[in-house]
Every structure is written in C-alpha cells, then in structure tokens.
Image (cartoon, rainbow, N blue to C red; front, side, top):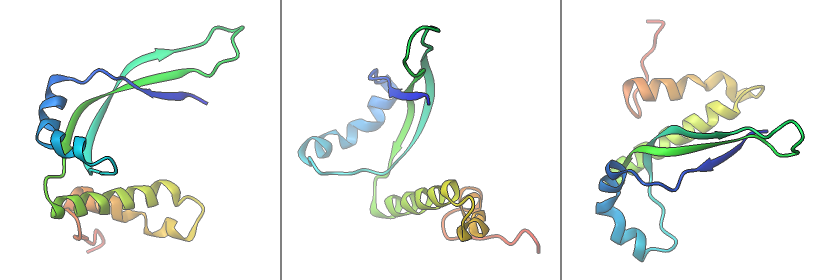
Amino acid sequence: MTDIKFDSKVLADVSAALEPFADAMFKSRAGRWMAVIELAHAERTEPGPDEEKDPSVKVRVVGIEVAADEFTDERLRVVQQDMYRRRTASGTLDEVGTYRADDILRNGVGLHVDDAA
C-alpha cells in the first residue's frame, strides 16, 4: 500500500486564504474548519527492490477556500457526507443512492435534477 504524506510547505496563495482564520485557529485548540482544498503531487518515493518499505507519495495543498459562515460550512458538510457515502457505498444498499454527490457538485446543495425528465 502506498503511504500518503503531506508536504509542509505552505504556498503564498494558501497562506493568504488561511490568514483571515489564523487567529481563530490559534485560539481554538479543538476547532474545526470546513474547506475545499486542491491537492497536487509534490514528491514520490519508490523503495529499492531490496527494501521492505512501502512506496510513498507526498501531496501539497495548492488551493484552499475555508467556509466563512455557517451556511457555507453546512453546505460543505453535506457535500462531504455525500462524497463519503458514494466512496463507501459499493456493495451496499446505499449504492443505489450514489447519484446525490454528483448532483450536488453539478447543481448545488439540496438541488436534485431528474436526468430522466
């Protein structure tokens, strides 16, 4: 299995997007913030044939937008839950309902467009 690592380098654009939330993040040790992030491949490590290590990939956050209000926070949580359900639904009764994440990403939270119509 490939290990995943996060690159600690913070790009200027990412830092600028996080700056308005920095004080709250510092003050709230148990805080959580919903965000949309974009990851990019930063580095790949492939062990040699005699090494008993897993390969690894390092990813870097190259774009981020943090939910600035409760409405946006809730919308992102709904999308996250639907994406999780879609990812984990294979072989379950939930597999039938996996259209929802695609609909939300295409049409917005709470909107379902019937493609059959």
